Length: 423
Ligand SMILES: Cc1cc2nc3c(=O)[nH]c(=O)nc-3n(C[C@H](O)[C@H](O)[C@H](O)COP(=O)(O)OP(=O)(O)OC[C@H]3O[C@@H](n4cnc5c(N)ncnc54)[C@H](O)[C@@H]3O)c2cc1C
Image 1 (cartoon, rainbow, N blue to C red):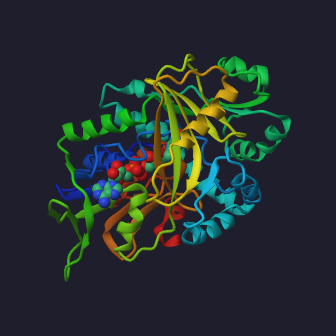
Image 2: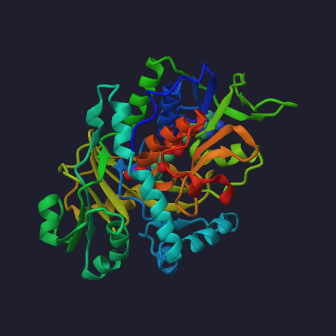
Image 3: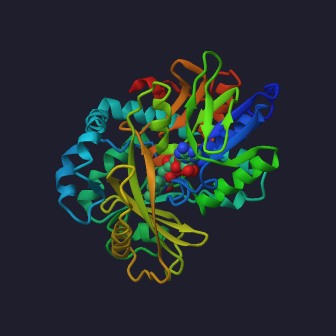
């Protein structure tokens, strides 16, 4: 797909305001700039410090398999009673999350899974091209690596259980190499004997520092004349006519175009526009080991343990856990110790001196698809949130799509599956 931003006519200096400087908002701001908008990026924290900071760094061109898969629901009861499992639910929050789980169950039907994989694979296909285009204007091209991803399995049974997801990828043209345990260890020598089978996807990539990636892009945005404001958006204000205004703790802004890219917090903001979105925080954790004693070559994902082990420029990061405890529940950092325990089963002897723990809120829709497109009834507002487990991978493609929509062009990807009205 060809890049569209840089050669387009300017938007006559129309003013755009992007709420949220995560990876999605920052990429959107850059692409709006390319379209000639005068852009303000607003965040209550620094760029990239939300969910975009502590993730696994995966740039998953093949990460289009949704969370809800045929048979997922059947595994839930056992997972809930296993203290070491990845799935956590706070029962007092469950009644509020129930509509999400009902939709999640529906999204896991085989026909629906095929349609979701089609929509997400088409969007993810352009991810490297979009990041390379943005990073070409910086000296930080080293941030993105394309060394593939290794899925590992600790038994023949779990390898067999993983075939559905691997075939879903193969049927969409992704090369997947099935491996023995020893072949997996040839690709990633740090792995111990617990690994019995592997599957290698050469086309996948990762960033070696997701926070630095967003910060670098935000610096580029600023250097090109963009404004970054550290303010908290309190709400949207409507007058008798004209587009909505954005009210922050410091000012009232009246841009020509508003982009809501506030990750999981977007749900409350867009409710003020009358749009109901089904989205839950799916909280994930990481353990960051600055001195792990090993350096891994490729990103490793364990299907048995639901963790990802990624080499960052500042240490080894282990991520995992899908915790549905509600957006406002305090973090439970013991979950980061759980992911470390799992990693040690795969890479014996990992050292944890100086380890830090982190929690982030994945903005999760029940169908694992983002919300991208115009706000129903508000043509001057665009939505760009709900990127679930693939927001880092999809961030730049979403940014390009926001630029195209703002410029009034047909987007390069089909956004119909991502429409806000689907909820
Ligand atoms: C453990 C874990 C591992 C992950 N691994 C991967 C991976 O390998 N690959 C991948 O693609 N994705 C991964 N993800 C998912 C990815 O991190 C998210 O999808 C992505 O970061 C979402 O980006 P965002 O810009 O939408 O949200 P955020 O990064 O959360 O940004 C939203 C921003 O909005 C701001 N904001 C919110 N409300 C307001 C307000 N009222 N006023 C002002 N500012 C506001 C916040 O401060 C925040 O900076 C992972 C997530 C987790 C938790």
